[in-house]
Length: 429
Image 1 (tube, rainbow, N blue to C red):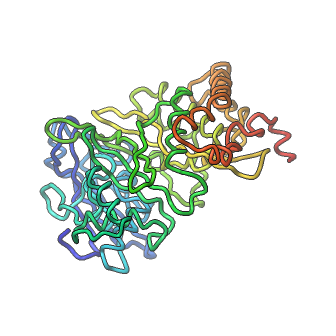
Image 2 (cartoon, rainbow, N blue to C red):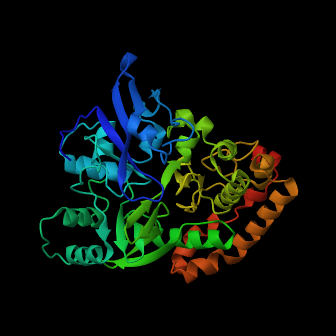
Image 3 (cartoon, helix red, strand yellow):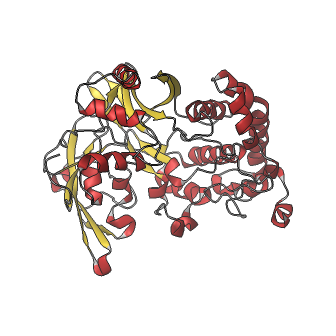
């Protein structure tokens, strides 16, 4: 990073399908608008538009054209660009290391790690690649384990960005706040997202999430690959990066857009009216190469989330990816159970039918046609998945190392009574 915080513009780079080197796609400018509302402007470069292999950053809102695109949503940051920025944990790390009290949205893009999601990069020069980052680096898995063991043992480590990054991951629950600590790690098989437990977790979050991915797969849901590693005596969940493909000549990057961007909404309660599985299924018709298959897959994920009481199924936890020119729904990720008090009604984060967010079988059947499913087809999916969850969640959890004590804590999450409650009775409860 070669600039002081406070940048108001940057160049946007992209790796094209089948390549591992960045090319310059365009320029992004963020400036104050009327009433102090930030206005973002993006324009594709002429050389990029002339490239026969060029692909759009966003096939809906940033189509390949010589126009200047503008937005005032999301603090002026286009959704497809924001998806390539750091998450809450990444922002906290950047704020800690930047040493500045105020950072702008472009600063977060510029300071973000090279292993960011998707195929985009950002920098200050018209020619890629983006500057190397001084922190938030991809960590070698063996080095991570060795450094973490040394930190826990109280041994001194060399003063290096990698050591500081590992220390941040180990010292959970301090100045980093409530964000869930994570890092990208590399081994012989490729890149993985490492997710660490927090000290205030009610159960072993890493093992439970790993078990939920296994359970979802057993229910016919297409999921990200995962495994558990022991780091400094602690369980760490590794989730395989599905937006990267390892080759002998470097990593191929898939473009990626979150459900939040696809729905053209924001992650605030004021914009929650567009948080919807039904609307997302409709949008897949415009984006996906196989909209019918992807809509059916989205329906299965919605049902699974209801059956495990995953109330954190917000639009950021859904995505589409494009390894080539075409977009498809990504594998499922971030599947976590919760145990709300109510036994009659639990709500998902996104609308799932005529009764809104109600995690209820009849509610999800009410809009099944929007998922390209007939009522009997949708009912068969629900019945089969409910039976599988009831019959196998405990065995799968125990097989994946979840303790009996933790199984007891999460047992109320699965196929809760309200899932089959008649909607009119739920309204009276």
